[in-house]
Length: 297
Image (cartoon, rainbow, N blue to C red; front, top):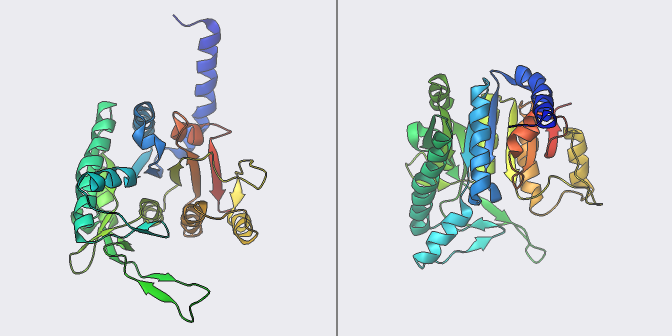
């Protein structure tokens, strides 16, 4: 039996969450699922319950997932060597087959099953289903001090989003399902493309004009040079932090994705610490949150 103190704590949590639940009822939230949250069993289940609760209180969660470690693991088992250029996996035809197998079948179905086991109704799709993600080949350009011109490098079946067919997502949401999207796109010639999951989540959020884009990651959030987590940032402030070198390295593409989404009409973007149990709910339904919030104003 709960003590009176425990009961009061529960009541305080619910009271704090209530205005947020009222504010976001009927709103769309796009969540990129990745990092530790994807590989730790306890975090997997807390994530699934967060998504189910969001749906239960009237929100429309859309899940986009990655799967880099799982792809790397299967490539190693199959003795297919991986090559990376500036963090991007070179994806030949054999590697693309593995990417489709892992993202479109194994990982996607695991996440669908996870959400369903926790009381939700999820349906998994890849970007190839209904031409959901129309893609084009990524033109990777590299500049080096010793070069007089830009070098164009062929990294195979790596793509970028050309357009999103929102009718597919609308159909699922209107049927009361939670869409779980694998970031595989299809080109005009029918070729498959591996696309960065953050970028897919950002583009889906833009097309749906979502209330929130949430990118789960393995860090506490965007930090200043003293290691303090920054939040409540305007797009102008983020541009300043990029210019002065506070944002650099591996965080830069993620922040750029969040920034593009907000500048394109998404109300807010969040870099969320996926190592924290129930990180999604804490960021949405509490005053303090567990990450970095970027907003239009």
